[in-house]
Amino acid sequence: MKNLQFEDLGLMRYKPCWDYQEALFKNVVSQKLAKRDALTKEEKDASPSPTSRLIFVEHPHVLTLGRSGDAENVIVSPARLAELGVDYFPINRGGDITYHGPGQLVAYPILDLDQFFTDIHKYLRFLEEAVIKTCAEFGVEAGRIDGLTGVWVDFEAGLQARKICAFGVKASRWVTMHGLALNVDSNLDFFDLIVPCGIKDRGVTSLTREVGRKISLNEVKPILKRHLQTLFEWNELD
Image 1: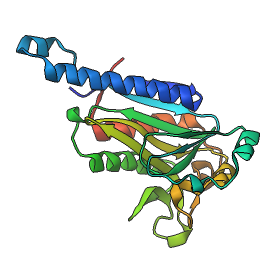
Image 2: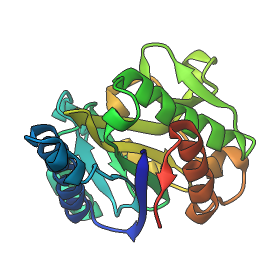
Image 3: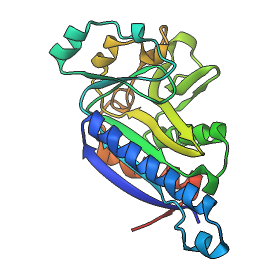
């Protein structure tokens, strides 16, 4: 059974949210191992199946650097970051440097992929597809670019392409964490502090910029959630 609990954390600083994610991730992994290592059928049946989670959150200004990232892609000094009130964390996801901040919808799926499918590439394509379909509901055509991560606007326009959503995930024992960051009404000036995702020759955008009116996170949340649920076919618990 693909059961999932959804939680909207609202506005939350990055570090306590990361700690919370880690705790949920470790709980799912420990439940999986307990069920796997049960000695008898009765013990296996008595062990609860892991419950996947989906977290929506908005972070204050923060930069995060993935495992394969280059710290040189932060192009301002630590003193300048402190002056602007921007936190900075090297973290354990894939990918390079990215920015989170107010007006950006961040989604962290903590899924037991053994209950869905054991294919990380398919998992990432599903996350991308949910974002593409969400953008379409606001009249924004978005898509993928071969060889580059993320979801893009004007994705067939070469160097005119603009990233609207970044992705960076971790998976261990087929349990996922971290996820996606969709620019809804972000202050795009903060992306000038970095080389976003290590990609030097393309820009960034937001739903607000593309649509031409202010888009709120509350408009986007139910749409993104619906598309994720349709693709992953989970059963949301109360």
